[in-house]
Image 1: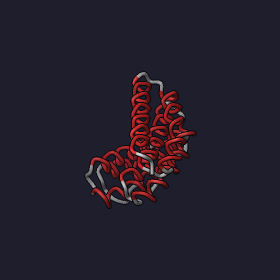
Image 2 (image 1 turned 90 degrees about the horizontal axis):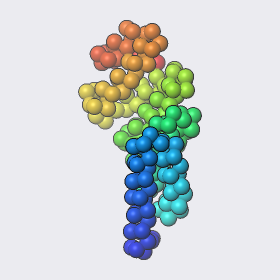
Image 3 (image 1 turned 180 degrees about the vertical axis):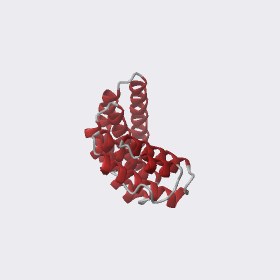
Image 4 (image 1 turned 30 degrees about the vertical axis):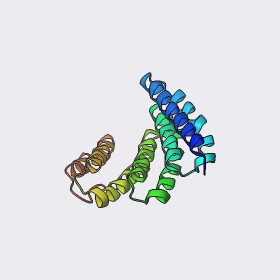
Length: 172
């Protein structure tokens, strides 16, 4: 356990990293933002634990920054590892777990792995429906993403079924 002064200092350092990251992202300097956050992760993990909330949040920020930079190949495994960690910490249906799984699927789509992306998004949609229901903001966003992927594959009828929320139409 850290003494209060060191805990406060670490919190301040993490806040400064978030501020710096936000400023870089505001300038569309996403790769640099990922590097700034990445520099803090190891030291914070040594002190707080690799699966502490602040460290997982830093890792998430790095993965999102990589994704925004268009580095989907690097972001994908980071989201997958994060989804597993969040699954252990907050459960398989936790908001962060599902979000990381969805982002991993979106990375797969950007890498041309459309079948895997559809399967991933459908899996997240199924889990989101259990947690939030069919018309939650998350479920609607996931259905939109799935529908757009299906449209891109010339699968308009399946896309319509997903967007209209007719179950079972787009198994992937």
